[in-house]
Image (cartoon, rainbow, N blue to C red; front, side, top):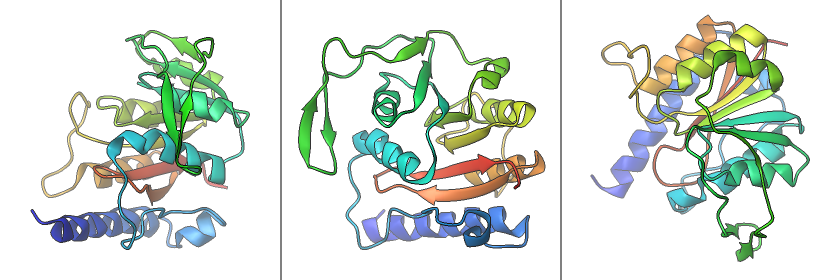
Length: 218
């Protein structure tokens, strides 16, 4: 598949997902989410490598949400949690597989490598995510965490929390999308049925870069 065709298909998918999110409430996202940025991936920009997804999601969260308590579900090495800590967030990585923080990362704003101190830490729960854990957080995050998306939506709905999902594949999920419906669109419809308003957004990296921000109606 050519890069141009791939970009067109991704743009069409984003429009589909956005349409599913907005049609349920009958108003556009500028009314539902005033001042928030839905697309950091304009077509003229060159997409960054997938490994920079943590920095890009950190930027989006910092620009659009006020600091609070955040759970990074299936957060791996914890780079997202580490970056958010520096902005005043209380973060916990919930992942049954322990991994050390990376020793360095690239700061996209300055285009420089940043060394991570060997003493640097993030809080971790080295266990699978359980729905009742949501009560201890304001925002639940799952980035490319297959098998967790429906569970996070259910948990956020039960305890009145917000959620940020960057869905990947449907592996390990308790439901499958209907024939002809993309998995991300199916998640939007599921979240709307649970009472959320949904803001789709895009980040500027290669691969599955469509995210969903879920919050309770105002």
